[in-house]
Image (cartoon, rainbow, N blue to C red; front, side, top):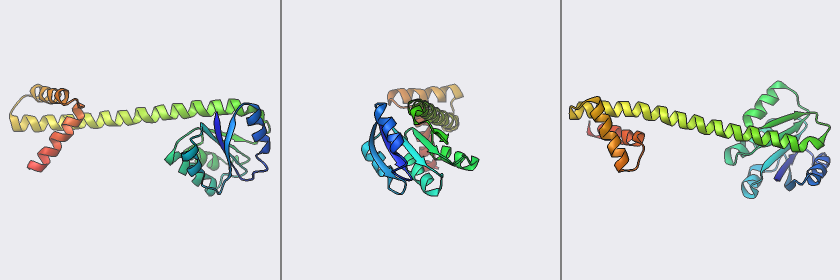
Length: 190
C-alpha cells in the first residue's frame, strides 16, 4: 500500500515512518503541512494519506479539503487535538479515521484498514445518494413530460408513458433523459 504522509514536523514522523516501512507500507512522499499535498496526491495516486499534526488548524483542514475535492482517498489523522469541533471539521474535510494521542504506531495497519473500509462505505453511500437523486428527478420529469404529451396529443396517461418508453428504448436512453428532452422541447415551442 502506497502512502503519503503529511506532518507538522518531519522529525515527529520518524517513528511512524519506521513502523510503516516495517509493516510493508511504502511512503511515496513525506511532506510538511504547508506544502501542496493535493498536488502530490493527484500525481502520485497513493492508496491512503496519513496526517500527523499536533493541532487540526485551518492549514491542515485546507489541505484535507483540497485533497478530498481533487482525489478523494482514505485519510488517517494522528493528532493531540481532542476538541470535538476539530474532530467534526476533520471528518467533514475527509478524515476516515481520527486518532488522538496514539502512542502505539504499531496500530497503523488496523487503523488503515478501518480508514479504507469507512472510505469505501462513504463512497458507496454517496454513489447511492446520487443515484436516488437522479431517480427522483427522473420520476418528476417523467410525470411532467407525460402531462405535456397527454395535453398536446390528446392521449391517455398510459399511452403517453408507453410513447416515452418506446422512444427511450429506440434511442438507448433512460426514460428520464427522454422526459428532459420533451420538457426542453415544449419550453422552446411555447
